Image (cartoon, rainbow, N blue to C red):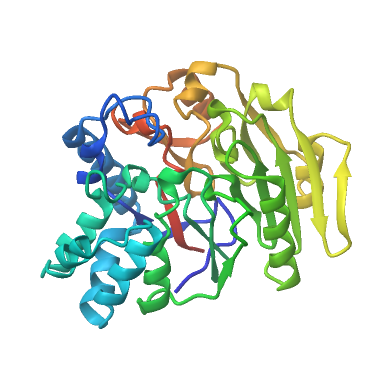
Length: 362
């Protein structure tokens, strides 16, 4: 069952991907191409991710893994050949030897790991996969499959597509954009039932945000979409790195965004520019008088994803433990925090929100 209508209701089920051998391809020459600032220690990154998963499980969140779901899909359906051909096509690889190498792998888990970790010089690895938020987003009871901006990440959504098509726990209605309409999941926030926010950013274009909004409104999935244009630079790569909802009336926002943003609203009447403040617009959209903005004014902590939180329930968030100033601010605001270590995970530039794809919320 799929159902996600906002960012804060009690989280019941979430999709993760534990970092695996795909991180082993990173080196000093290709790390920037793969959008990493440094090369994570795989064993430590896996342990940090396990802490993340354990906190979710301790709070009665069912954790499902991309690798396990994909293995079930291949084990229970006669689609191995078509999956491999589709995968190779998306990688622009027509090498018959590579096809034969993959089709000869008997264990489907091994096969999937091979497609994730790539083949040097032939098939691109996918080290960013542990950021499961970006390739697709569950909105209501359907799934939006995104067009990723960077070549390094364009192949990632194949697993979500096969899981949605063949796994009995998924099978939601799907929404696709044209190939030149770029949206990434980190820019898509569900403000409330029927109300979306989409960041226009380094990774998501105005054209993509507008097209997705109009498609979802036309199909009755949402009624309104707030487009938030933020600075187009790596430190603000996605909306969820600078802005998030953490409680019923409380949001976190990076100071720089408050000084440099533009708002557009799309509804059934079309598109219009919003001239009042983000705080005022949130109050109008959510019908909440006292919107509280927690301001992150530390550029180092924002860079280390202090604003990139995952709500497991209203006023309960998972955060990175190194952001001491922001974590103290959350606590003073009455937000319960669950800190996790991330000295290696952070090297891929993403926080708990990036690393999670909610599947079911109350």
